[in-house]
Length: 223
Image (cartoon, rainbow, N blue to C red; front, side, top):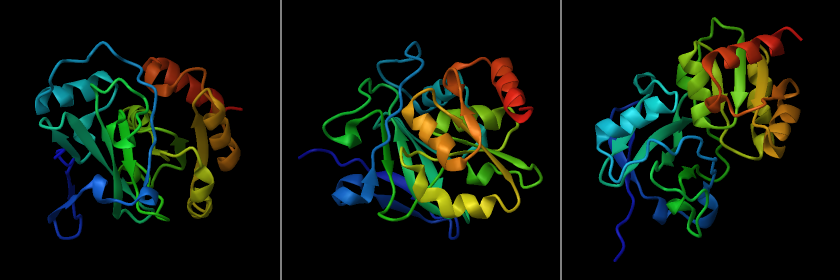
């Protein structure tokens, strides 16, 4: 019998823990979002929880900014996804040692994203600073994490179909300026079209040097 992948998900209201088993979900209850790995140099045969954290740092993330679950037994990291009011609605699992962008079973891909059917979820809601007018909309967690570390508001939509977030974008636009920074590909172009403001970057943000990211954002805001 295969070992079920089980991830602890925290109930933010009651501080209780419960388990979500992706293999118990129906076909329509998850979306699979696989992003290109940009750094293959930090792979190890087996991660400890501490080296998982070090790997995230090597990818430009400050892990201390987030509520992250490290699982050295399953060799993965779990990030929580939230709805617009901050409730946990799903998660994304990241397997650093999984080289395949996609697999026949999406749960065996490098990135596996679980969201209940009809419930969009994003990464970065808990890090929003409401005193800052601009919110950058990006595609992946590590791109949002790069911007968070540099002091910017950012939300990762984790989907190739961002139109499902249109109603939430309209609410955010009442008090914030939304600026999409899309990946240099058709999905990134779609994100810019949906947000109706922004650019595609010459490289993925988490590939760029910090000064180049800041320069890009400055150029976008000064258009």
